[in-house]
Length: 136
Image (cartoon, rainbow, N blue to C red; front, side, top):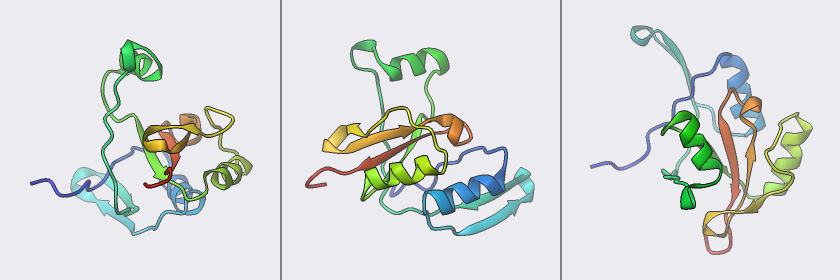
């Protein structure tokens, strides 16, 4: 029986810079690093409880997910970080030089406000910030 999402792995060209991003910029708890000799990898972990898997599919065969699937096929699309003050987080991250795909957060699933950070700002990974709506 599957009981939780264990982790999402992201390949990064600069481990120290990526650790700094997730630790300092996004404020995630840092568990530490570990070298895995058999896999020839250095790893860093940021444990986060209460995660979900979101399956995304284009509505009516159009939109950004349709273009993504045409270009790349299926696969990990983005990571989403929950925010308790999305406007403050956007302002803070913009001040640090992060580029966003929109000027302001917009309505998303479950009545949440959402905004995406451009993948060029995050080692090629699309990051979503999400502030849950009322009742979530």
